[in-house]
Length: 193
Figure 1 (cartoon, rainbow, N blue to C red):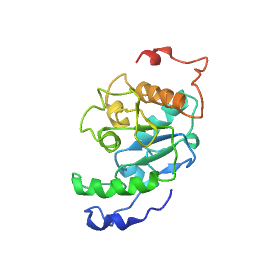
Figure 2: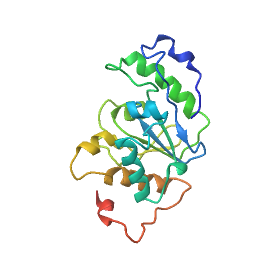
Figure 3: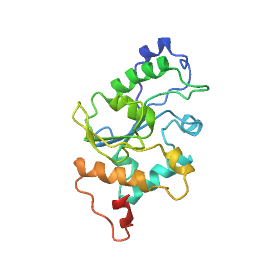
Figure 4: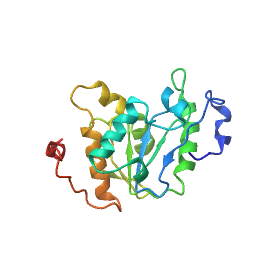
């Protein structure tokens, strides 16, 4: 995990809470952006910690397409665990931190996982579900591939890792990792989801 300059936290109601920054391969072509750290993430000091349901979901999705955490970078819009509802001013403070964090990373594809990261990247309040897995070009040169949050998919029967795995497949096609090639045991229904 990298430490960020917390000068942006001065007007934030989350100031003083444990800050969790991104982790993974800082030279990665693919970045996943979460909404905020969950309780398990704070304890493990890692977004989508491997001991959480969301972390296991991410790991299963990565495995389905032949990737590991070492192949990607994972971060979040909000860096601290909110105890109550987030205020817009807190999100704006954290967006400055995320801008700082992403500076120097040069991804080919970014997957916003949920409405908040989708809004951060596109400026749109709604549409993550309607636009899931529809790639769009960001003004900073990378491709945005929207996907709902792992928490959402975990709550839905039958969805499991299909949508995030599909997002990762699309991201691989835009990255230096190269064209996605399905393993022999691949579930081809993903291509049509």
